[in-house]
Image 1 (cartoon, rainbow, N blue to C red):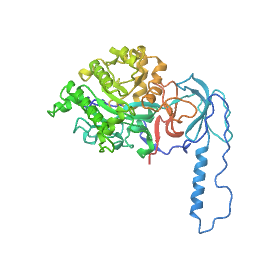
Image 2 (cartoon, rainbow, N blue to C red):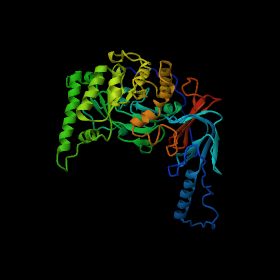
Image 3 (cartoon, helix red, strand yellow):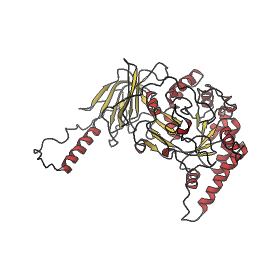
Image 4 (cartoon, rainbow, N blue to C red):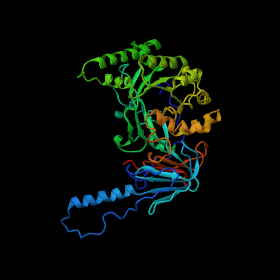
Length: 466
């Protein structure tokens, strides 16, 4: 996020009304069937059954066990979404059924046997896709429509803040999470801001819940760093390093050298939050998330990655298309965006909706991001659609907001496409989501319905987080 860039007017934001969601499908635990093949599921009987009359002095242990048994039975229930136009992302679209059990996708195909006793949801021809993923947001850390003092996105008291963690500042009751659901987004990567050369640790999480630990998919999911105008402006105004691009690169280099020296110490080493975080990067346990816009800053990002051998992800990459061949040869992903902003500073002069198509034409794997609240998070799919208008392939556009960001976050085995065994993070759309007139009608996370749009009232409702 650009701390010097004004936040645009978010415009209409659907669905602040809340209500309780449908009964949850539950936690993982089922055995997936092969996609496209028949599936059977054991019929679940009523929990508790008939037993002896309960005496006034009830055995609370037995009552508790009965409650848990009933809850477990509900979680084992199979849900069948039928008559859907299914777009798996990794695989050809088809008209058919997706089965969900225990929060996971049990099977999918054009003709599946629906288990006896399954709950059936008739999609009536609507499009069923995996939940979208925005891999670069400040959701819950930088609330919309509030004073700057409420922002927790940048700890700009020291240039090196590798030890701070986004998870410690995310408010799951930020209204932006409901906006994410309205846009069909079921997972996000929340980053610290770009005011520091080294800004802190990101967290990948679902977009619905009341307790952060229940929402987390991976923490930390990367370490944020910034090159370019933001850090040099912040610290230049404070008359301290860095005040230039070369000073910013120095701060990053020195931090990694300090981490290497710390790692070389014999055990037991003294605990150090910053060194431990940088060590995770050097050991390639988490990626280095490099904020950079200008081509020369992208080149510096590549240079630093070569020096220290870490896994690099380029965030923003406004001018990355100018050296797309170099980036493609190294297999480095680019998270491009935000794409709906004005060219509010020199670094953004090269911003264009045509750039995603130019990057992919050169072989770069891209994800599209909103940098929420810079661009409202529910506009993620619209950025993808307009990139298609400017030359990006439609299939690639869908991958750029599903499986590609899932790979960057190290979560492709769980989310980002529809496959047996993956999390049941699903969205029913009224039509092709790349059509600006289509809406997310129902959103499921882990098989639990968490958002519904009423076509008659034109009002969206997220499930209660309470």
